[in-house]
Amino acid sequence: MTTRGGPGIRVSRYGEQEVISGARPPHRWDPAWQIGWLGDAVTVGFGLVEGIEPTIDGDKISGDAQGAQPVLKLPDTWDDEGRLWVALKVKTGEDGKIAEERDAVTVEIVSKLRGDDRTGVHALAVVTKTGLVHQVEYFHLRYVRRDSSVDGRKVVQHLFW
Amino acid sequence: MRRQFLSSHLLLSQGGDEWRLRLTGWRGFRHPWAAVVTWEPELKTWCMGFRPGFVNGIDPLVKGAAGYDSVVLSGSAVASDRAAVGGGRREVGVSEGKDREIFKDGERKDLPLLSSPLLALNFADAQRWPQRRRVPAAIENMGVPARVDGTGGVAVSEMGGVTVDLSVADREEKQAKGRVARTLDILLAQPRVGIRETVDLLDPTGVTGRIVQYNRVYDLSVMEQVGARAFLYAVPDAEEAMKRRRLSFGEKFAGGVDGDDMLDKQHICRVWAIGPEEGDVVDGTWQIEVEYRTFWNLKYASRLPPLNVIPEAVNFPLGLGIGGGFGGLVINQILALNDDLYQRVLRASAESAPEGRFWG
Image (cartoon, rainbow over all chains, first blue to last red; front, side):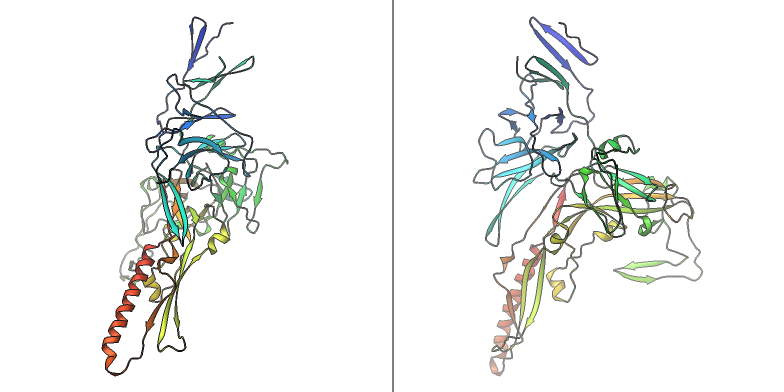
């Protein structure tokens, strides 16, 4: 069986291995967090939070040396308005700074944009049940956790900008 | 080779015996809040659909205000495609057989942007142009005069809120000729908590003199009414609607009435309806242009200022009738205490603004 590439697609053969490459024409603007839509899964392009690149299941979102990006599969549970978010999760330590562990900053699919005192959540894109994807965040991000207390109760705010 | 492999926007994956090749990658920037304005002949109004924008990752609601209708195109997956079709409108059939529902005033339904609601634009109370303020150059190029100097030869000056009539008997009318325009401003409002400061004069028994009591409570009335979710609505004048109406404690102590509406607002866009000279009622023949002020998805945060900066209600003793020779010394001491308390309250009041901010 031979594989033939159509326009914009190149097929190369190395012994037993076939490599197929294709590329869209370059966009005029190259922002962070470019969401690639696969119908039942998404990929997330390169982006930084406080200079740290997030991971999906331990793999960096922009992919490894060969360009293989990790893929996030969409679950079947939508929220009551038929939405899901591709969200950034930042784990912080006691001191309020991003934790020093390996997977402190990750990208996950969530149905509620709510973290807790230790985890900040920030939306990167919205996916609707009808198959629409809307990218929400286009820039690399700075992050800070602000702890304050209101009338004796602890209030934690996770701020992204 | 079982694992998924992505190279330059191609995803090759294997499931059992089958290989799947998919083209992926980013689809390009789509400017949030981009609007498509179309004329609805049945309602005889212009209706505005938005490409979704987000506040903290959540799409705001589209609310009809009093007198405005909210039109819904049921069957989502319409707004984005419709905007991409470059202004044309596409009817979408849904399972129940009706492709849209129209909610008149009274049955107002607030819908999130992701379900593609339309905001009906009522130009009856819109701002009229030309006027004293300058129109943007792009609108001027379409035939609307840049500005006019007052009406009917009367020059009016507003200084510090006071209107002064400077009419001169032999001044000529300077009405410029050209097309007329009407504008409506689309605002995004985010409800928040307010702070209600009260100042009461008390006359407790057993104590000579009176006490001024200062108290602060959180005011959740607006949030209870409209919910916590941001919403889009139309107003005739954004500047007027976005004026800060929350008074400082000093202003309130002096008798001012606080008009804080507990909504933080962001100006999304201005819709221009440009019509013929002498045009009066905006209809389907008018030209619509949208002037954007916000191009990005927004983040928002507000401060919830602590109420216990001053431990309990603060009581200032007032007007203790001190007689005899001690008068001067004690009164001075009391006044100093008063002043100190008053300053503390002023400072706490000024530092505890509950207004939040939007950033992109």
